[in-house]
Length: 287
Image (cartoon, rainbow, N blue to C red; front, side, top):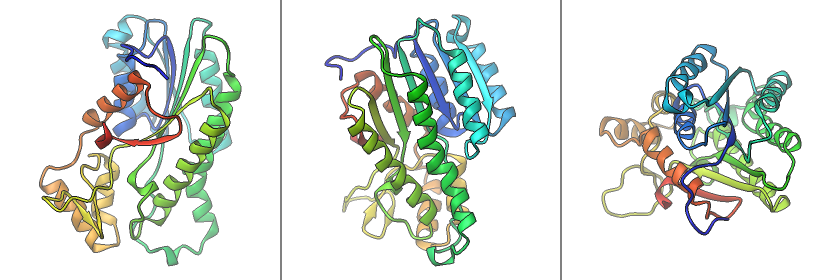
């Protein structure tokens, strides 16, 4: 834990899942500008076209012109083959000059939010969701930590992109809430087991109790600023619960969604300051 804020993330190997769109893509852009020359980004997602366009964009950036290495891995992290390809690419991108390994577990799916919990009787459907959203995150993290063990002079950081849904139940969002809650506990356990590892669960939203000008009210919970992403579009069009669906739609109509860039800037500040408690849940409105 640093007592003063650094100005960069070091000569880093940054492994970012779900990097092709939305918040993951923004993380890749922002991290590329905060790493030293000789760093490498390993970007993974299921969309090859979107990854390749990001790779081209980063190659033209100031960091790209300074020699940033960008490796793109088109992979389904819900399958062992996909996990293996990411680990192999990470090992190949690593060099003896790297002093910081950063894993960002961003990949996630919303799941079917058009149904209530009592409709999920198909175990294969639930297992498939949890495989991508929980199991893959644990197995990738474990594989990366084994591939890059603790060594003198090597920092290691694991970031879990979490959500208010890890803490607050949303009606008709049983899969997403379950996945986020499981992931967050998983990383809390990891922080307890690995005291030399920096572990952070970062959320772009927060549960606030504010009687004046609430942004979004769900039951007794007030949620300012969900991220403006493709997932949010699905949430406001397909959520079964009418009050939640209306709340999200109203926020969009009133221009109250939070941009990925604004939230990511605060995440980068948090990582540079490096003063958070390892394993903690921190959201954008805490900063």
